[in-house]
Image (cartoon, helix red, strand yellow):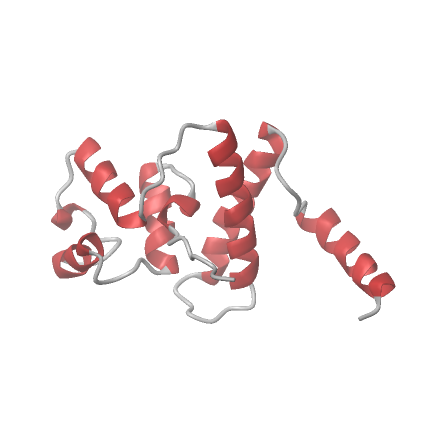
Length: 140
């Protein structure tokens, strides 16, 4: 691996997307906007060249959230259930996510949210898409 080539490529990515640990609210807002744009671009695609970038941006947002906001650790389904309760919504009130059986499967943990559903929920509840992305545990 040529570190000079890597450095040049990184500088281009960094200048374009500002990918770096989030240290202030202005950068946080840029990362949330980028995450929203990535979710829009990726749509429902299961394979997309920008999926890894969405994962990285979501992790940066999640790290900032954990450090600066009292965000309880909850699974996406628990977050969804909480938001539904707070807004007085039933499973039938989320047609943009899917029919009642799809919502039921998500809430029971038998199905994960896809990118399109995450986008719809993020827009509906005006929250970061990272709240609906399942945490992956890495075992070393």
